[in-house]
Image 1 (tube, rainbow over the protein chains, first blue to last red):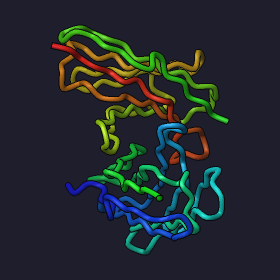
Image 2 (cartoon, each protein chain N blue to C red):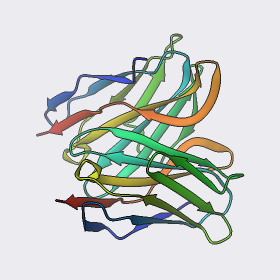
Image 3 (cartoon, each protein chain N blue to C red):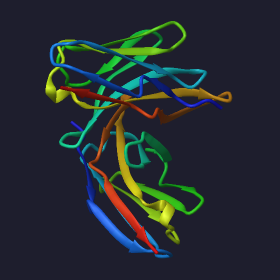
Length: 116
Length: 113
C-alpha cells in the first residue's frame, strides 16, 4: 500500500514570506493531522482535519492554517514566516485500512522548512 | 492537559541485550498510547498502539504495556540489534481527541556491536 506522502520534502524561505505544504493520506483515511517538530519543543500538534472540517486544534498562532479537500488531501499554510518556524513538519493520517478501522497514526516523511 | 515524559533520554546497550524504555503520562483519561521510532531526519514509524482497554501489545521482538492507574507505559525490546538504533517516542491520545497526540521527548537508543 502507498504510504503518506508529503511535498515538497525541503523548502527554504525568508522571513515574512508564506509557505504551503501538502499531504496526501493513505487511501481510505479521512483524518489528517499536522505536527511541528523542533529540537527545542519536540513534536507538537498543530491541527487535525476530518471530512474537510477542522476537528482539533493545537496552541499555535493564527499564522498557521490548514484545509482539507474532498479527496482527503490536506494543505497547511504558514503566513508571515518567522525564524522560529524552521522545523520539520509532519503529517499523519488514520482511518480505515483494508476494511478495518484503526486509530494508528501513520506518518509521512515530513517537509523540512528552513526560514532565513 | 496531557503531559508525557520519557526516561532515559539516551541509552546505549550492546547487541543482544534486552531493554526497557519508559513512558509516563499525567492524564488518566488516556484513550490510547502509541510507540514510534524515528530515524535521523526521517518521519515516524508506528510500532505499537495500545488502546486504553488493553494491557499490552506485541509485535515480533517488541512488547508494549500500559498501566493507566500508574500512568505508565513500557516498551520492551528483546535481543536488541544494531538496526534498532533510533529515537523511540511514545505518544498519548486523550478521550475525546483521539487524533491529537501528545508526544514525549523521546529516548535515543544506540545498539553497539
